[in-house]
Length: 291
Image 1 (cartoon, rainbow, N blue to C red):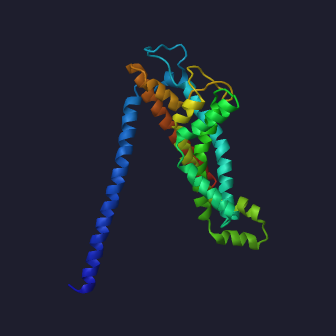
Image 2: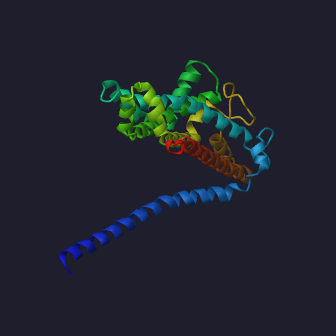
Image 3: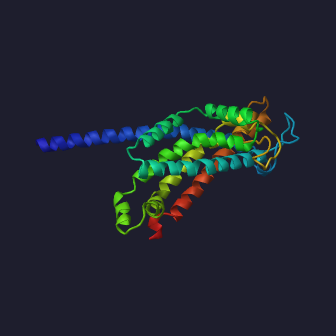
């Protein structure tokens, strides 16, 4: 066997070993996810029915078998929507400044530092901040909007970092071609850079939404508990699915535990549905499809 053949054989062996390690790592990462999904689906289907999706817990006793999570579903959708309305524009605009305007500046370095700090802030700290400032200092009562403010704090760093990375991936040739045609920078960003990076930005936004949709600690301090339907997130306590699961799981009876599992399954399905909608929007607005 020649030296070249020995080197080629050694490279193939190393390639197979590394490939096997990659597959093993993938399996180790997927197995917990599949086991959690299977456990939630197996236990949640027992109470996942039309009554669960269309009724609240108003008038339901501690050991009654009825009731549902309609009030919690409404609360979660409104709170996440409000948090997205607050966090997404601020996060995307911050990323645009960091990539397009503030490269190398002191202000951009300061912003990047605080974004990194916010990324590691525990969710309970965001809830405590809104509780101390919004509820105690300003005297505004518990509401879904207060919970949305806390969730928006947790969303912002994820939106900023994901949008920043996607904007940096846009080739500079596209910007330079636009500038060569005499297009202003703001219009280049609006018409060239953002549409090119839109798919990645939407993916980052969905990651941020998926993170905050299951947060319980901030809602405990800002939203409070209620068994009734409250469609107004700006007035009075409002339930959320994470709070609903927390509340039902803490009750010492099987009917409440079944409702908790069904609530967890509902939350997973909502996040999956939002991801599907985001994927469809990204596909519809992608530059390759427009051509």
